Image (cartoon, rainbow over the protein chains, first blue to last red):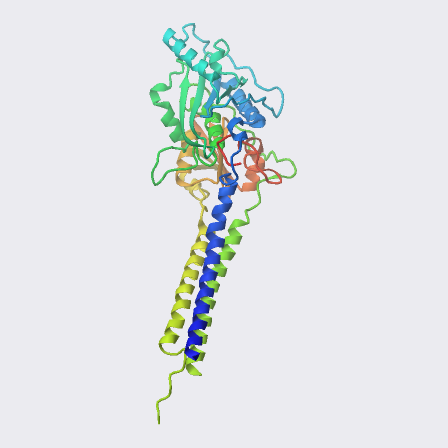
Length: 306
Length: 151
């Protein structure tokens, strides 16, 4: 009878131990996964606004225009972007919000002065076709001249231009970009195409879309796709200067070592609590395991000696 | 004299009693070590020590590179994964847990500055403000309302 009681007791201990392990696995593995799914919007249903929300909001669009405008004024090259977001609904045009005045600066005349030759008839036809596609639903575009203005629409103002096109595949079920491809087109006088520009540019940004063990998933359709797309657009003037086709763009403020300072209360996010919490969980798990086996050993020793 | 009766729970029963806790505690310790190692070392990479060994120091915390900014940035990010990064026409900014690395155009090459995170954020606030931090530490720029990012 007492033997049965011991087995019962031992069985109870096993069940308790298994329950503790299951609870800990739930806490350490399942909860973070569910949390990340929720934060990514995967378990909170569909959101209609994602279907029509502009990729760049007013402040982001204004920031892009300002950055490109300053570089364009210094380099005499117009910079633009076209985003084919893969969505089928019309995206409302954003009114950019600028941090200061004036907003877009006029482009400095190219030096030497633009030639009268311009694009050939075939090139002009190709450009016209691409410009017609700007009216397709799901397409957003802008440039140093403003949102909704493609430099190719202003050949007098922009004889030299570089336009980055981001072509995405949109997953309607998951409401995210499942794939993406960048291409860079230039005016014929910049003649950058011989460098197989797009792949060179993508590699230079360290954001290759190639798959493999060293793949950098933080790319144009990854978790920070919009920030990476903004990077690709903003770095166009650096690339043009790198190829020796224009002088370097103005260096960012702060380069001379004088800290500009951020407005009061504007800081980097404080360190996440995740690291100390998970460190604590790890220590508790290890301690729990050690205590468990120690208690079991002491109990066994007592039971064998008594 | 009859031999003593085996005590309930001893012998085979006792062995069985210790086997369960041993397996359980090993699982627990293994899980704990995994969680602890991930918490301590995951994502902790920085070029802070690598940059002085590979570029010419021209001033405290400032280095000169012969390559242009995009190439320098590509070289650094391929070796050291960033926590965040911002590319602008005026320079490239890489954020690590212990440093802000700025790669700025300088003639045909680049100038590289290395700062502590808070100082680097303040120094280059006009370029990275809003993207890395903001009022109350909340970033707001280029986070998107469209399909590119989580809500």
